[in-house]
Structure formats: C-alpha cells, structure tokens
Length: 465
Image (cartoon, rainbow, N blue to C red; front, side, top):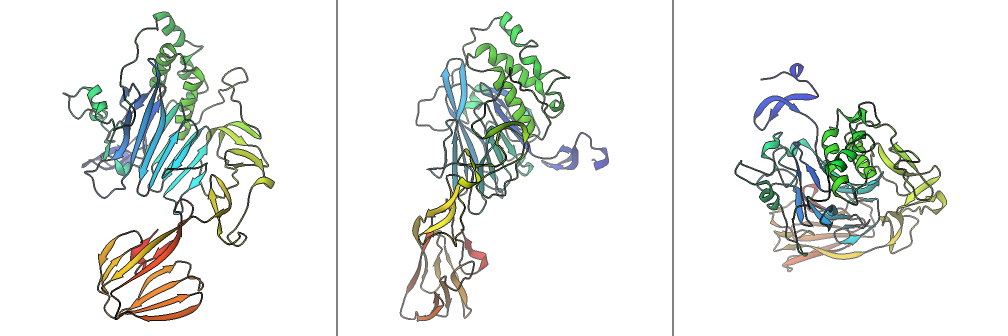
C-alpha cells in the first residue's frame, strides 16, 4: 500500500505490473555509447561486440493494444578493438526510417534531407544540435549520433518490450536473461537479426592496455573530469550517474585507438541534455573546440530552430552548431532568408504542389499514383487501402468518396439505393446502377512521402490516409 505523500525522489503511487506502490514515473531511457556499451531502460549495463545487427527495442508481439514498432541497430567493427554503430532502422505502421552515420537518411527507401515531417505527423525526423532526432506520434524519441544513441520510451510500454534495451519492468535482473541459467552472450545473440553481410560477434582483444595506461586515463587530465563534483558536469550527476560513463571512458581510451576523450564527454552531455539536466560550459578554444560550418555558431544549450521549412517541432536544449541570426537551415546549410524558397499552393504552377522535399519547401512536381475504391454487388466494399468488408446500406445515403476540404471543384461520390451521385467541378450527375454489378472509384494521389490527400470512405468511421 502507498499514498502519494509517502513517495519520494519523484516516484508516484500507482499500480505497475499488478503491484501498488511508489514507482518511477515518466519515460524510460536506453543508452548505447562508446565502443558499444549498453544500458537498458532498467539500468543494466553490458557490452556488445562485433558487426552484427540487433533488435534494440520493439513491442513484443504477444502484447496487444499498443502501437507496434521496432528499432534495429547495426554495429560496425573497424578492427579488433574498435566497434561503433553505423546504421539504425525504425519501423512503425506505414513507415520504415533508416539513419546512418554517413549522414544519409531514408524513409520507405527514399533518400531525403532533414527536416522531414510525415503528412499526418506520424513521424518527425530532424537535426537537433549534434544529433538526429526521430519522434513518433505515440511518444517514442530516438536520438542518434555517431558517438551515442538514446531511446526514450513512454511508460505505457512498461513490461511489454523486447530487445537489447530490456523489458522496462523496473527490474534490471531479468533484462536479456529471463532466468539464472542463461548466459548473457547467448541472450545477446537471441536478438540478432538476419543480415545480408557476414556477422561476427567476437570479443575485443584484451591486450594492449597496461596498469600505467589505466591510471593515466583514469586521472584528472582525462576521464575523472566526469566525476568532479565541482566541475562542468556536476549539475547532471543526480540525473545521469557519471560512474558508468567514467568506467567506459577509461576502458575505451585505453583499448581503442580511435575513441577520444572529447567524444566520451560529448556523449555524456548529450544524454544529460536529453534527460533535461543542466551542464556548464566545458569546451574551450584549447580543449574539445567544436568547429562549425559557415554561417553557424556553437552553443552549449540552444532550442532555436531557424529553418526555412515551417514546422512545429518542439526542440529541447541541445549542444551543437546553430544558424546565426539572419540565416536559416535549408537542407543542412545555413542560408540567408533571400535564399529560402517560399511558396503556397496558390503560387505553384499546375502540376506542382507546395511541399517539403529534401528538407526544403518549394513547388515540387506531383508524384501521382492511381488507387481504387470498389463496390461490388451493392454490399461488398474494398477501400483505397485494400481493406475489404461487407455493409448493408439499406435506404440510407452515404458518401463513398470525398476530398475532406469539400471544395466544390473536387469530386464527390455519393451512393444510395443503386444510384451513384457524382459531383465534379460543380456539375452534378446521376447514374443508375441496377444493371451494373460493380463500381470503382479511381483516384490520383500524391506520393504519401510528400503529401497524402485524406479521404472519407462511407463516412468518418472509415477514414484512410
């Protein structure tokens, strides 16, 4: 039993996994950093080696009633002592989003520049600071950079997750290993996915780091900066425990010939800011100085999104390079306002539409696809999305297909008792269907990656996008 007044440290009194008590509220965070050090939602730490592809986190298929999704990560093994992640793929209903550390991004196989917002806001993909950010409309946020990746998970998925990030049930002991008899290396292999490339999951070479090197990298000039209670990171210590980052820092600097102290510290800052913590200025002209592209400037904490593209993205405080005043982000470059392409549907010529492609708003050619909605035998229906169902219309009047803005110039199809009422460009027509066994509505839709025209099929209950 519990009462809210008895709960401390930000916990709330509620039922979790059938138990009423003081439980942690808010989203869980899974972290992947450095030479592939993983921390699950529940706080279990482990390492993954090799160049295999794994399910990082997904909705378990056995649980119904929640949004289905999966996040995969492909590791990159440069040599026996250097491992990083190079490819991330997230699948949600209707979308497959892929991000790579070579700056390429694809949605449903098509390459694009950032930012990208799907027509109905299902997914948003954009740059924030030094990271790419992928958001879904059901609350999952993936932050990705070459040095660190985080997955922020809504608590509604607690206990219903599979993958390397664990099940998110507040018990780190059963992450990866469902019982004490399982070996963690075998448990990690369980989440490998089939891959086109040959996969190896070999451990790192333990040679090449002596006690003297360990003491050096664990000292004040290197990783101990993370633990300094009076240093630049002390304000984040209560939010993100620096001890695990410190241990990984010493290990990676000692064994890896590519990991740098600046990368490790930057990763800690990224996680702190993602969790809403404050970090003091830690870079200097002679220490981890960050060089920014033309017309941009470094900021430790900025939430200013100056894009040519109009968007409603709520961006948290992030470290990175941001466009200077008077310049705007256009396809990854900071350009003056005069070079921002502005348009509306009323200013675009015929055959084009004002839309966002490759991170730029402009008049783009329509990409048209023919789709069909069919009525057969008077009661058998198939929607534009291919969903088939039976419905007895009786003597009622139904909208079979109509563009949502109800502009009279747009086609409207109404069906009632064997009659088809058509309105096209303000002209009404009536067709008797007594001698016709089926009718099909054909529609040209713009490619859904740019802008999908929403339709009503048989009233508001059968909306398709």
